[in-house]
Image (cartoon, rainbow, N blue to C red; front, side):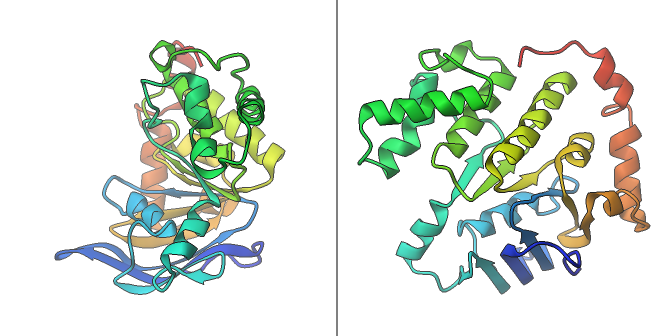
Length: 270
């Protein structure tokens, strides 16, 4: 599957990537280019290889065949120092937030600064923390405990931490997982706001098709390890590929993710 024609300059490229765990083929000849300063979403059923693909982008996994290029560097031949430098250019919003319950909200957001920018004074760190919490709609939350937060608020704290280092790329692993539909909508809007504010590259792994269509410039679908479709969002939702149309139909109009259900369910505090 080729990348969409006429896209912006790509900063991450996979070319013929194959990854197996034993006899199980998880990624099968995947070729995709992620455009710079755009939001690209990768969707597909559970077990399709989405999270495995994400791990290749930051050198947590390496392809058995094919090539992964990030910021012009071949990940398979990158030195430890190069990998460290590449990873510093990424932010990551984990599926469960991956927040430290023993730290306050502010301490969680400041954590990357303490480890990667020790030259900053404590005052400079807290100025950055307050700024990023304000960006995600949580001003004044620095001293709040993680246990006091709703699911939507935990996602916002996770996003503040993901952008605290002002990365070039932010990876989202199921940003709407575990949230009610209306809270999911608020997270989608936050992603759009952050894209407009920061002008950086977002890569999203998601099951939430409605949210994906709202926030993504490009959508790719993995099915049984293969990239079966990759196109600008407006073209993707009109795909004639049977497995894509079936997946969209089931996840947009099915009872679990229907638009009516989004309107009827009570919102969780976001």
